[in-house]
Image 1 (tube, helix red, strand yellow):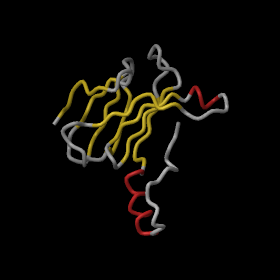
Image 2 (cartoon, helix red, strand yellow):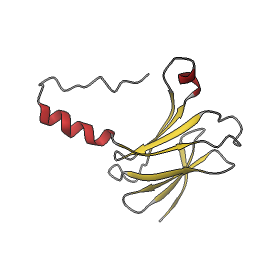
Image 3 (cartoon, helix red, strand yellow):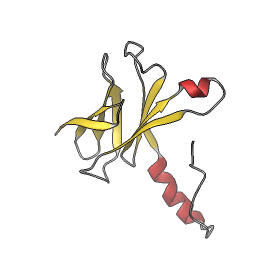
Image 4 (cartoon, helix red, strand yellow):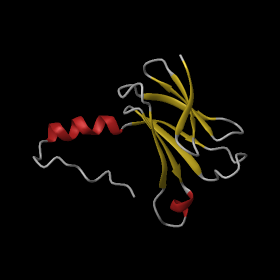
Length: 118
């Protein structure tokens, strides 16, 4: 389910709407290589909010919406945004670079960070 239309802002102030729009910016998208078993039709997105999202696009091909499988948030920094991401060529890992100089390695199956490079 995509709940992006559920804003708790009831005052109708356009400036508040603009302020909320920036953290939703998607800065990086990557599609999982077909060689990785069990991850067909997976996609990863990352944005200025620093949240890595793993999506199953297979549900979208049958007329539905993509299913959010994992929502990955760094515990050590809530403010660093994601600038780039890529999938490992043969493992279900997503590698992300962040605005604070950290590179994070995530297990896309379970949504846990398995390592960092600084």
